[in-house]
Each structure stands twice: as C-alpha cells, then as structure tokens.
Length: 419
Image 1 (cartoon, helix red, strand yellow):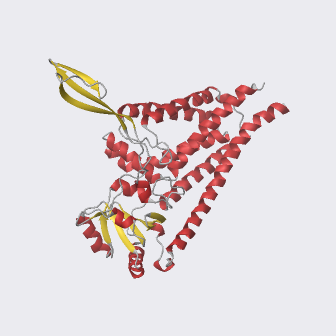
Image 2 (cartoon, one colour):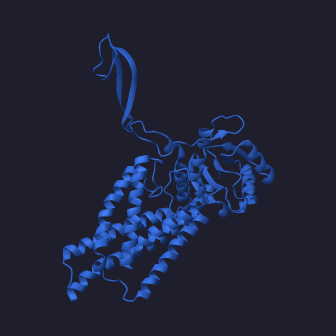
Image 3 (cartoon, one colour):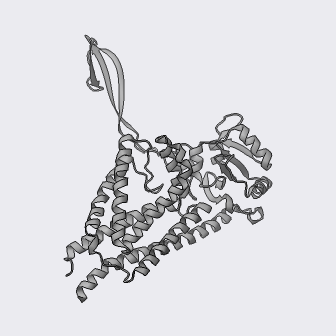
C-alpha cells in the first residue's frame, strides 16, 4: 500500500533539505581542511584541551567527510535506515554541543559552514534546532523509503565511490589551495577596499545610561532625562544596541621588523607589481621550493617589482631563516591569524598590483622564474582560467548529486502511478 502524496512529498522534502545542508557544510569544510583544523585548535584552546591539537587536522577531514557522506546518502537515498540513525545521533550530539557553546561563547564563529557563511553561536544553535525537525521526521519514517539501488552491493559501491571523491577533494585542497576561496583575500579582491568603511555605512548604535546618586541612592537615567543639580554623577555605561558595518578585513597590516613603522598603504597603493611571501611561522615553514622563491625574488628585483615576506615570527627566527635559505628579500611583521587567513599554505605566495590580489600559489606550486612574464597581469589571468576549469568540474559533480536527489524524489510518484 503506497503512502499518501502529501506525506510522501514531506518526507522527501525533509530528506533533500537535510541532505543539502550536510553536503554544503561538508563541502565548504572539505575544500579548506586547514581552515577547519585552525577552528578545531581554537576550540581546544578555549576549552583548555590543547593536548588534542595534534588530532585537529584528522578531525577536520573526518568531520567534513562524515557530513558529506551523510548528506549524499540522504540525497541519493542510499542505506536510508543506517543513514537515518547516523543522522539522528550526529545532529543530537551537535545540537547539544552548539547549545553549550552558545551559552559559554568560547569562540565568536562556530565554523559550521567554514568561511562561506559566518554565523554566531546562537544562530548555529537555532539552525540546528530547525534542522532537527526534518531529521526527526526522516528518522521516524525511515522504514518508508524505497531503496534507490535494488541490490545492496550497488549501495555500498556508491558509498565507497562518494567517499573516495570526498577524500580526494580534501587531499587536493590540502596539497594545493581551496578550489573555492570564500575568504576576503580571494583572487580578485582589493585589500584596501575591503579594509575601508563606506561613507554611508551604518555605525554602531549605543544606548547610554548615566548613574547619579542622591542621599545614598543611585539611579539610572537616560541622556534625555537627566536629573537636577542635587544629583551627583557616579558612572556612565554604554550598551551596544545595533552593530554597524564591519569591513571584511580588519586585522591586516604590514609593519617594519626593525622600525615598527606601518607600511600597509605604501605597499597596497604601490602601482608596481608586488610579490608577497606569506609565512606565518618561519620555523614551521616548508623549504621545499625555496630556491624557486629566491629566484622569483631576484627576477622581481631585475624587473623593478616588489618582493617582500610577511611573517609573525620574531627577528631571531627571521635571521635564522635568512641564514638557512639565503633569502634575498625584506621581511615585515603581520598578525598570525590574518596570515593564516590570507593563504592556506606556509609559505604561500601572492601577486598584488595596487592592493588587488592577482594570483596565489601554494608552496608546492611555486612557478619557475622563467615561466613568469613581464606582463604579470596576463599571466595571472591564465592562472585564473585554470581555476575556472576546476570550478566547472566540481559544478558537474554537484549537478550529479542534485540529479540523484531529483530522481529519488520523482521515483515514488512514478511507482505510485504504475502500481
């Protein structure tokens, strides 16, 4: 006996909504495993369990793989009974965890959607609570799903195939750079523009409360209803009512190592091409392609271009690095967290012109100096074209997942008509 249509549609709508959320959440983490690792480290530090830091990268890959696998299983209708149990346990755990995090607020951003969607801890909890409605509906109706694949061997084959794709995406992104960059330092971004506040942008709004005392009694007053001269002012408190515009980039600076002078706008407004080697920690920095980096620095000097290194390491480690590598470029200081945000590579190389990021390279993909052209703008556009091809490839994969979800949604209707 078939299900009635409204119930049938609601069940599959729940499956698609939950599946899409899990696929998206897992994907944005999977293409940026280092970003997820940094977020795990933030939580470990906040909860005083720093001894777990060596597991951060493994956990980041495992979490993204688990989310994508659950989401794909829901969209494709694979192993729905098992998927429903895993989904319920997963969501129950993280709903409780996000409620605890929202109460204690150990970190500002939960990181549940990576850098793609920034949510507060309370927003994350309410999102999980709404999603639990669909999850519970799927769980209680788990026996009513029709298997998409008629034989179990095909279901397990699909699961293994999807898992290999997921792990492949994470491995490629780790060894290169994220195929999609959601951060404000993406290729094409104007750093100076993203640091500035538009003239018409809303400002922070505060409620001012003034406390006055008379005859030993302290009372609060607003700025519109101040007391008479017989009252003596005690203190003033301001409460943020409405947060104004916050620029996407707030902590970027380029500071001289020796003199402490701020060179940020000198670099960003320079009309010449500028190579920036980003190495947040020189002790942990890979020296795999250091000869290529040095050659590009020498080639830049010959062409009259800039080449600098941004690091958070102290002068002593900078000196040790120069002695080991023979680095022929100047070093500047910047914020470590910002440097980790700029590029997921230590070191990584950026190409700028007047503050606009034209290209980014992982240290594994540093080009040879003889590959560079004097017209670096043309060269950077060739690199961007290659990135577009990668996006098209992943677009096809996403279209495949959506097609499977659509087939699973339409199939019960077809079965009902033919039964």
